Amino acid sequence: MSEQQSTDVDLVVVGLGPGAESLATGAAAAGLRVVAVDKHLVGGECPYYGCVPSKMMLRAADSLAEARRVSQLSGEAQVVPSWAPVARRISEEATSGWDDQIAVQRLEDAGVTFHHGVGRLDGPGRVVVTLPDGATRAYEAARGVVLNPGTRPAELPIEGLAGTPYWTNREAVQATELPGSLIVVGGGPIGAEMAQVFQRFGVRVTLLEAGPRILGPDEPEAAQVLEEVFVEEGMRVMTGVEITSVSHADGGFEITLGSGDTLRADKLLLAAGRTPNLDDIGLETVGLDPQARTVEVDEHLRAGERLWVIGDVTGKGAFTHVAMYQSAIALRDITGQDGPPAQYHAVPHTTFTDPEVGGVGLTEEQAREAGLRVRVGTAPMESSSRGWLHGPGGRGLVKVVEDADRGVLVGATAMGPSGGEVLGFLAVAVHAEVPVETLQQMIYAYPTFHRTIETALGALEETR
Ligand SMILES: Cc1cc2nc3c(=O)[nH]c(=O)nc-3n(C[C@H](O)[C@H](O)[C@H](O)COP(=O)(O)OP(=O)(O)OC[C@H]3O[C@@H](n4cnc5c(N)ncnc54)[C@H](O)[C@@H]3O)c2cc1C
Ligand SMILES: NC(=O)c1ccc[n+]([C@@H]2O[C@H](COP(=O)([O-])OP(=O)(O)OC[C@H]3O[C@@H](n4cnc5c(N)ncnc54)[C@H](O)[C@@H]3O)[C@@H](O)[C@H]2O)c1
Image (cartoon, rainbow, N blue to C red; front, side, top):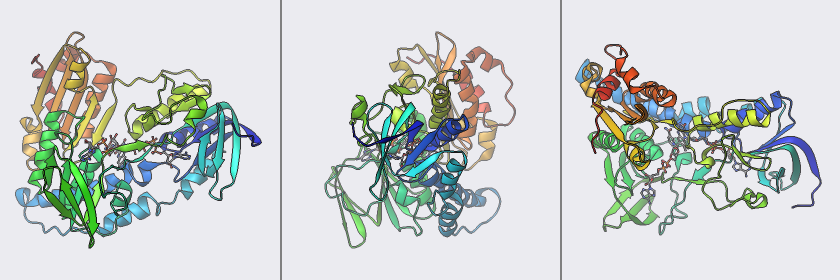
């Protein structure tokens, strides 16, 4: 423990991802003396480098794809993509030029003492903040400390990669000009969303995935449809690849694969997972492992004496909505209010490709691994009147996974146009454990995409 004289406060919040930003504000509103610290931008990855700019990019790319469908539906349209409006919207409307002044002001107006600086635990309830000029401040927090440090793009130990000017999501959302060609490494949500954006803007994209399919944690049927759509749009998708070396020369990248093949592109975007920002936050000073990928938390987000942890590093789903959900529960616990504990049986997610891939709860494979007697029902979106009449761009599916012994859905996938919106229905069903019998007896408005849910429920059967 450091000998530095400390200032007494009630709560110190280290790392201001979206959840902690609202937690700090709420704690100050509840009358606590709150100190908050972020080493970069208040709000974290989501508003500046993640959800918000990437969804602006996807909105733009979707408009191009829809315009290209005019020839099949309604006449002729000449589509000439331009990245300038996308770059401008991201810089001016979404991120204020990657400046968090407004967010800082909001915190301070709420009564929070804010520092731009690096926060580090220094024993239970103690935090040392290193300010940009190197000065340090020590705080003793009577109520405790909240950690919300998030993640950073994972680096890959590939020969030749380090030191090359590769992009991560952070550079990709700041691009002001597009490359002619791009290799995207990683077919998870970041890689899939980004690859489709750039492909639709005319970049020649190759998507490399080490696993057997893209969107590995989602249902394989959904991953297969998405891969087919990507390929139809002109993208090269390679799964099961091993990258053995990377080099950069003459303004371009060269990648060698385990198969011996060589790929070349102007730019390389690494979207191969995330590294938790836990390695240098002083976890060892409170008896926790700084090398761990996640911090174990209880149902009130407590991780130890006077310590709460929220966000991606809890391993409960690396999504903004999970961080916000946890934030509200931790705030209640900190301020001594009653409320329901955290439950994670119905965590929803949507990958905003076109078609969107929404999922909630368990996949079929996860349900079987959990030892459940599983019934599964699947229906293609095109089998519904709406999916069929939608025509181009209407691909997708609904898959429902039932715990047959209890007669409730434990997981579901909604893929298609507005798949993430259709998912809302299924999220309620899984969250509230609505009996499948009830779901089967409902009336589904005609002709909606969500009528595909009725068809999938009608197809429920035990397949193994
Ligand atoms: C490209 C991309 C797209 C995404 N799209 C979506 C989406 O559509 N929907 C969705 O739900 N999620 C999406 N996500 C995930 C989402 O961004 C995260 O789940 C969300 O930001 C919550 O993360 P977090 O709260 O754990 O922390 P983060 O948002 O990572 O923020 C952590 C903060 O802590 C700070 N920090 C870290 N260590 C310290 C320290 N020692 N001292 C001080 N400050 C520190 C960091 O500077 C940062 O500001 C996306 C992510 C990416 C990268
Ligand atoms: N729409 C959304 O909600 C959204 C969008 C983007 C990100 N996110 C969140 O951010 C998290 C991180 O996203 P992500 O896509 O970076 O990570 P991820 O871990 O979900 O996916 C990374 C992918 O990269 C692959 N990979 C790893 N090493 C590789 C290698 N050497 N060569 C080729 N492929 C390799 C993995 O097999 C995996 O499929 C997501 O899991 C999600 O929780 C959410």
